[in-house]
Image (cartoon, rainbow, N blue to C red; front, side, top):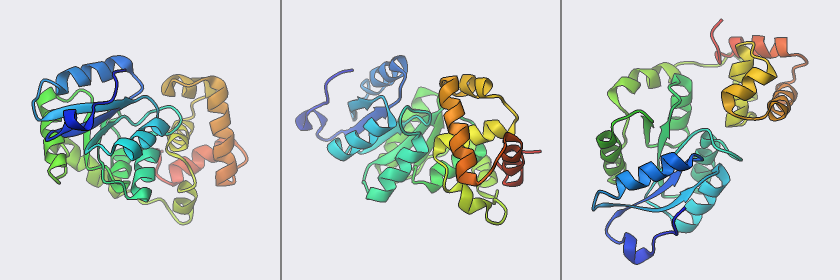
Length: 226
């Protein structure tokens, strides 16, 4: 990882923090963005907690944020920054093509959302638009956003869901699809032990006793479709 850019180096440019735990992707993004005279990558973060700390310290105009990060998930990062009123505007850059996750990111403060297979010029356009105070959502994701925001958990399920972290919601969704701990671990690139801990915490927070009850809860609350 390169050293952070100085204030003089970043002057009159859109300052960008890249938050992603994959080194090759960070290097590729840095190389791409620094081809443009009006953009500068001032630093990188490899965990969610590090992303929050670097936003506090460096106050970049834009953060490109992956959603699946160690320590804190991307939605948790968004919620933490929103809670502190940080001026940095966040563009989610992810491989997760999921309408409910998209909706939650926007509700949590993201000003842009792009999939990682987007064209490079689309990413640059998104950064410039969001830096100027606008929002960015590709046309093909607009219907997904409305679909995701239209899903309302039933009764008290909404309050219970609010107790879960972003990672726990991901695990709950996979639980709802009847995946085993081993399969959940493979899907989320975590250890089977970590998956087991997440499952235990989910059951405790939701007041459930068994995985079967978690499956029913996930279906009832709209996390997965029956």
